[in-house]
Image (cartoon, rainbow, N blue to C red; front, side):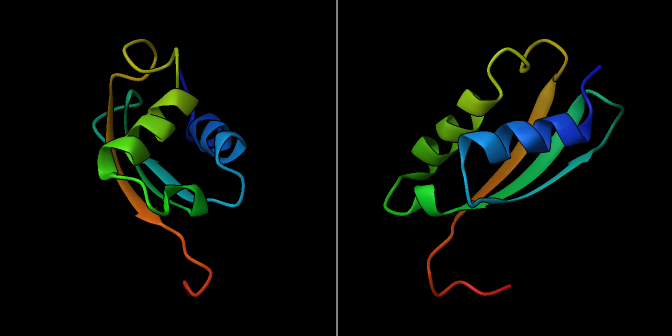
Length: 80
């Protein structure tokens, strides 16, 4: 079984400087994540999602059954 902290750590390791929020719903194999990262700047939403999925390689379809994902480019003037 995968834990929220491991999902968050994998995304943060793959996207240094990212702001990552991860939660679970519908059991321990369905996750939701909001990822704000400077690496997303200038990328399409599909490219952004692929970057996150790459960080979770080997988990999705295994210990992680589903991921609801929202990605946001983090710009230098972003606040919050």
